[in-house]
Length: 172
Image (cartoon, rainbow, N blue to C red):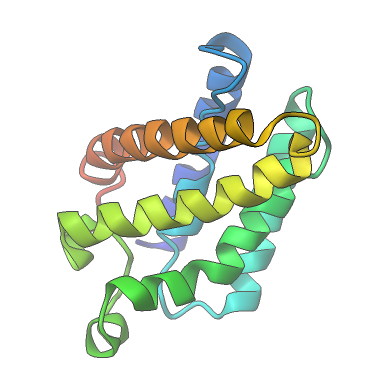
């Protein structure tokens, strides 16, 4: 994916995120976070520092754009960018990772990409919920919130991936 396509995809994802956060409030336990997609699909050749800076910029833009705890999305996205490569190494072999031009179901396969998405969202929401309000609620409420968010966001990401990355931003 070229730099222009990636930037355009990131802007589209930010607009979708703002729309979802502002108008689609399903439940107070559920936070739909589509902003992880640009961090997830960064080319594997990008080093960790660049991925973390991109995640910080996306997270701060999201945090500044709507009500909520300032820096919450930024911190969780930076953590996801930091652990992106180690999580990818759990899913794909070293030879497969070296040949990756981009991370997606067309390069990893649908099953491995879904597992990678599930792992990355798990990490994202561990940080997000821990920074948001883990000490205010019981363990079972917090764990339920974590499971609900990871499963719902993984499903949303699979839908988003199949519409955006195979459609206008498909660049394969």
